[in-house]
Length: 176
Ligand code: SF4
Image 1 (cartoon, rainbow, N blue to C red):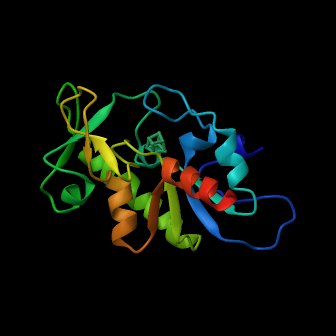
Image 2: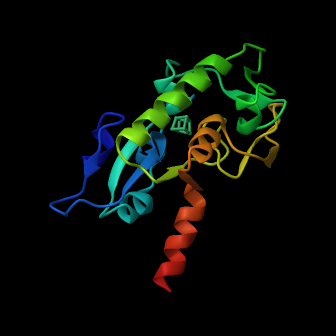
């Protein structure tokens, strides 16, 4: 079953021929890898991936962080500025997790490249996976425009990144 697959292992649905491969934030597929030990239940998303080969990945776990773990936010800018050494990733208590976030992003990029991924469907608002908006670093639930550390790295290497909400909206548009 799709939810039980190990991260990074390519999943192919049914007996379909080789298809487009997409990387997906593992938590969106139900994997309990979020900072709070939970995952999401999104049957519509799983259904929409029928016919695609799916590579699930949780960059923060790939970066060596445990589940559960302290929530983190970016300070000084978004993921692009993390890669420019102008922003960092911190816990609310001020612990610097930037190294782990960068390591997880790099491993996710490796996975994507190894599997020929051209598009990633990622969980928006996450300090790793956010595609459109991320939290502003004050831990007050305020969102600002920007990408997470992994989304920025994938994009920098030519991989299209799309928030799960935008993916759903596109699919709805296609159904009309
Ligand atoms: S949003 Fe990304 S980093 Fe956070 S739990 Fe989901 S897959 Fe992991």
